[in-house]
Length: 602
Image (cartoon, rainbow, N blue to C red):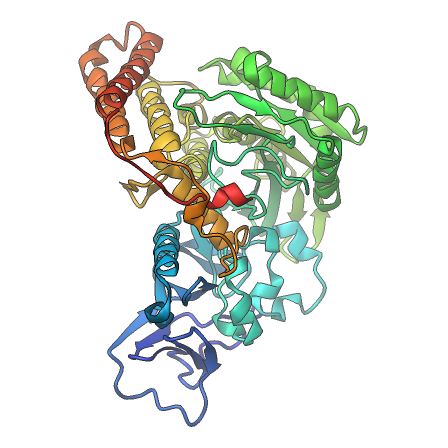
């Protein structure tokens, strides 16, 4: 029966029936129709289905949903988020994993009818944020196993842990909808509670000298300091950093399973980057008395969770990045238990010398190899444990970081395959063209996923991961992505399901803060419309001109790309910015309007 414990432990209801009545929504298991609950459309109250509840007749609509994500209370009502479509993307420890393809909020807000004008206005704004939440990218889950815990940690759990409800098994750092689950947990709806992971889930098959193998790459985004590029940088006072992601590479071959963990995250200082229409806004380091404590808290957390840490800083050593990097290095000198390595990626590797990462590897190879990896045999015996972690960062923790992590992952994979006996001591995966291509593609696609979630575009330098060198097509693609990042971060932030959301980028930040619990709606607080100045409505023509201008120049100068690629990409960016300036001038007389700023409260 659906909902019974799977061989791995607890199992959620996979297909759920949603019945929509005039006064309530009824949600119940298709396999166990007596098990369910309803939520009142007037006040959002939740009650379990009882023997006396007659929900069999009169629904306005009946449909199938694939999970309940949670609830959120606003000024005049409660809203329940459900999964309306999904896609199976692979398996994790033998259990299917799905990607969320679409979600929908069920509105229980009849209280709007008796709300004040200002409350209705505020509620409408909050509801617009929920529409953004519905299109959140990169959400994954499983009905039969928790996907937030890495392989090594799973094996250290106490007996019976997997029999617990999945939400209790999960690492709360990586549960995207943690804040939305509270009411479901309160009503003990364990088989309906669906923890979601945001990040990336990539799986592929390798041949490896006639030894079939599965390689899995899973990235887990931390929820403690969620946000988008430019709008959330650095650390908070607790030591949590922006764009913190745990990436695990798992190999399954000949009965052996191995795992390598790496982490990335924004430089753990208190700093910001204010969007000001410049292509590369100035970095501003905030002088705070707690800075040293913030850095210490961050690395103490890593030490407790992962062991000895190598902090690899890939930022430039000049300009604004150089100042930030110097401040980081100064703080790291105060932490003798963490090894800090500064490696100016742009200076050493440029745009194409990917192989120069061997210089970085030579400097950390001894410690990296001592950290090792996790390895178990077919009987579940632990043969190796990972004793530490490499923490990489650039400014965004996207492009340079992904290239570097893929390089280290390749080195570790070679050691694993040699220990298992698939490769000889003189062989490495790069000698097997098709397997190597699959491996690199896996890392490149993972980089794209993470970049889309944080920056709104595909990753730059993807060719370095895919091919080990920069190609002409990749240079052009990077130029377009760089232009798109400028456009998105300054005006509209975020590509959602292959369409641009024509809303100021701060709206998406507000949506993130709302759903993650960093901002709480309450009637006694200030209206969000009382927190802002005035913003131009002319963003759309500026941004459109940027894209049109950039793409036009791209077309006109494509035939010159082979002679001077750098000049070509520069011309694209400059033409786009120039077009944007012209649009700004022409739109100077447009009307201004106010809009709320939730993030101003944080």
